[in-house]
Image (cartoon, rainbow, N blue to C red):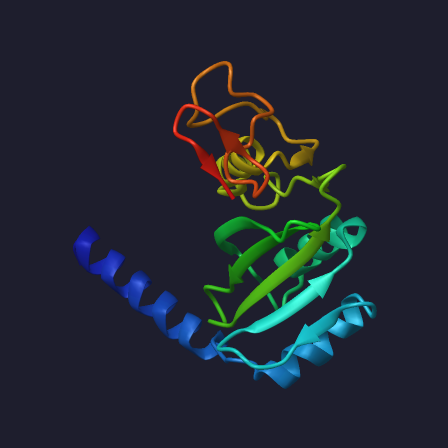
Length: 176
């Protein structure tokens, strides 16, 4: 038997094994499981994905649980962004389990004056760049981030946060 044939057999066995493990939880089943992990979660009804609101102080614990719980295995952070509502900021994290194929959206409200939340870059490596982008554009301080510095904007833009609603650009006369 050739090495290529052996590799094909191993790959086929893995695919078959993964197919047996793959099962989507309904949103209601996910709600039960997530409420067990963090009883204080709140859910937004409607929409395509399950939307979950949590306190920013619970984020690191909850993120770690989402990633490492064997029935959840949210191993893919595919979007991290921030929304400025003028009165507060909201961090938004889109996660999916590549094994179970269930997506969720996690939201956490932040104070505009002290916009801080724990970094999840050690849980999901993609967060490292997403968090740097949100840091420079919205001014969110990601606590314990390994390399929190400007990503896109040139030097001298620290603290200017051009995607905040109160940003004013006198050169281009942008005012929201």
